[in-house]
Image 1: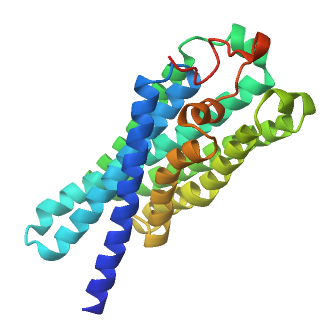
Image 2: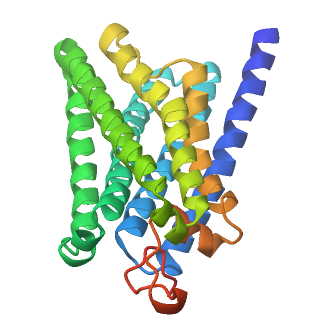
Length: 285
């Protein structure tokens, strides 16, 4: 009885966090889709919000399905759905990591090479990169699911590949933000760009390594080592907090939602008399 009570409390906490994250990400998606001019940073951030929203929704469904498995007699039918949802979690988790890395690289390049970024950067590069990341994640997870369903001899191999991908994404993001931090220390740069941008970059990086990486690493280590689909409660809780906290960062760093998005999703281009250029990230329609 005590174990069942603890399980219900844990389920309530997880579902509460998930619900808050779903609402936050829905607000972010609506704001970016309808009220902000499209630019590379808003495209990446919109895709990231979609990935976080989908991941939280799947976490909620998995929690409810796990409850159903304990009280329902249709164990086999629900189990197949449960496993399929778990692999969808893999898909959105890898996509989210890739999008976070792409945002870091885009932000770093825009700061380190501003002239090239304004004049020579391909117009639809952000959309292309997002599409490739979604396709790559989908292909990887599809192979993992087929291998798990029809013959598990290659599951450990795919798990090892996924771990290598997570490590690569983490290193790229770390290096990109390191260069960005160094650039932000330059006096001339800090005069042109708000201090809130520095805070947002720092918070995003800390949350990425504290919350996102442990879940991803344990996720694929469990799959490669013990053929266990989802990790333990702590890592799952961290992943849910990570997917829920990103939109909170966007709104709490600045004074207004519009200003925050301008400062977080990219650096602000300032023209004569302090006016923003049309290409400035987050320019509101």
